[in-house]
Length: 243
Length: 393
Image 1: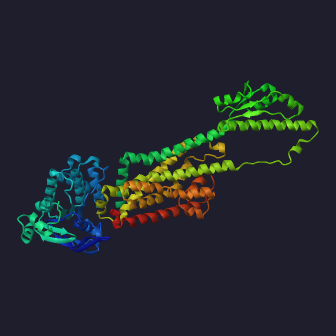
Image 2 (image 1 turned 180 degrees about the horizontal axis):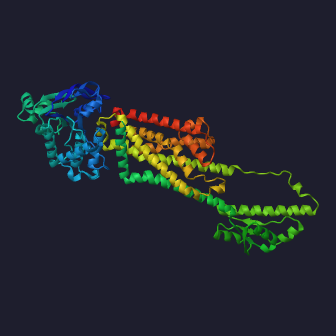
Image 3 (image 1 turned 180 degrees about the vertical axis):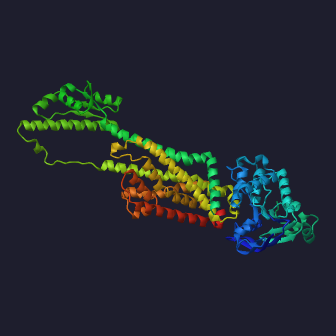
């Protein structure tokens, strides 16, 4: 479970996050939705301890990310925005490196690698160098890397960016599988349709604040509109340019 | 922490070994080609300066019949004399054909004037702008001067005057400076090459492990691993230091197997470079990789891209060589306080070993301790830098 309360973060004169609070439950998919520059990535980066919040609290399974960043990191698997992999290593070696950093060793690690390669359909390219991988293949490696330590919480920042239709479908399927197995999945997107297709809970973020939150049906009921898209536009105001 | 260090070390080494281009530039271009180029250039320049002293010097003499004794004297002095007939007006044409030609013109009547004890003029033609011709002309001039003073002495003796009257002051020249200063220069260049090539050995890894990691977007995922950030960077410093150590070992092997080609004995130096010295050189220089790797990593962590890192590190490569340059100018000798200056202490120890001078164990101890201390401080600094948020760019 991921719990965020009153989070704020500024970079110089820019207030990237002003006041963000939400809870992402286990066994549910929670989507952070908002235009580019709304503060989604900054919120997630505070959660996975790349940044330190100026104010507010963030907890992963009750572990405060600021006080016990290592403990928090052990409980999350992260797919950062535009995550790169090591081109000179094979897909398996890329994932194994992270397994080792998570303290996995020997046969247990190798079994975990085999299972991930099977689960993510990476068999074909698992032992090829990552140099010429397609964006879809890279994303699979990055996702396997994020899941190698079987974290209870998974954070995905714009995971479908740059993926083609088939790869996007496959990724959505994977995210649903994570939910089925009881994970807490938190992901961000600026694509409304994607969030609508996948999420149990939606947190709309705009100008560093939560502009609305709830299930798709709740959002539609509260903000009006025949479709989720209309509800979304009502939340943000029509002047917002959305992708 | 050890497990993390080993995991990072293994991954960085594997990655660099697989990247053939950076591997070649780290371990082939620098450690092998660098010293070989040095040995080649040194042996070439030394051989040239040595052989030019012993070579038979050619000189062309026109009108040799007018002063046969002079020509004989030139031959005795080791000159290869070519006889050619022609007047003064023709000589410039000969030199135009062959710029290295040195022509001595002996006009008619020289023999008679010499016999009569009167001043006799000969003319020496040479192209002064041609280095070789100029050198040859100087030697001919010296030989003729020698011949002339011999004649003068005989004339004075024939008139009952002691020849010592001609030498109110005798200057005894004992030239010690030339071979020594040359040797110092060459030794200085050797330790410079050893240190720079060692640094270059870990350069691409230091860049790749920091700026490269950021540029590829793999740094952020890496920092989500549940290990302290500074442990990751310690592993990277260790990897870079390992590559520097390998480069250092390769330099030693390359130098050890090629340095005998430099005719060091000719300039009064012995090539004191056997296996024992090679191992000692490696051992006294090894602590330097701690400073090199951590320094490059600290600088690379400030840069935003691979390209920027390369630019900066090119400049940083000069920093450890500054003390050597200053020491070269001031001609400092090894002393305990200087042993506390990393890179300078390695330079002085390398020089001492190559010259086969006795090195106090305390010097080595101070050098190792001060160098490792600076390396540890810089590694700690690199770790601190990695804890900043800004590191993600």
